[in-house]
Length: 178
Image (cartoon, rainbow, N blue to C red; front, side, top):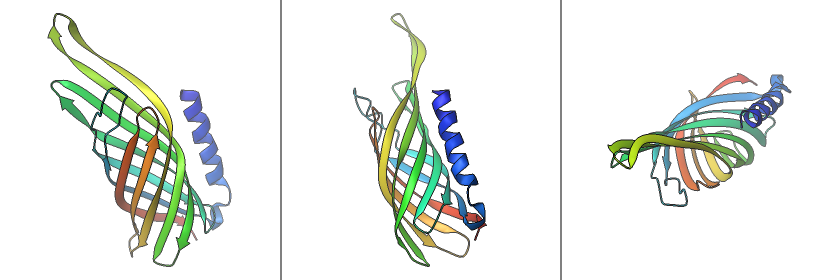
């Protein structure tokens, strides 16, 4: 798994290194609302989180980006579920106006989850299980250009063993390029 993540990160970094003089780079953060990841046994309901992301505009219509989302842990009857996700996305701008940008996105989702069981004595002695799930995400978003940065909103669906609808909103700040 670490090899795959390293290869994907290296690929994304090499794309970013091409044509930096004409590029626009944005970094941002926002709030996330997820429907809860469905693990096959039920909905684990990790619904609120924080997101940090970056976007690199290759040209006026195509961009690449990465984001990391941390969902706040949920505790139900002493069982704690933790979920976070790394997304590597491609963006296609359908509408790119001076003050408004509408785009589609698709990419790779790598979800990291852990379930911690309480020590209740007897049969369960406590402990945890964890795993990594790889999936795809597809969605759409919009950016509104402000003086200080770009307000954004996104809706995407993650297709994996942890299916999830994710809605995010935040701000991205341009940090380089044209």
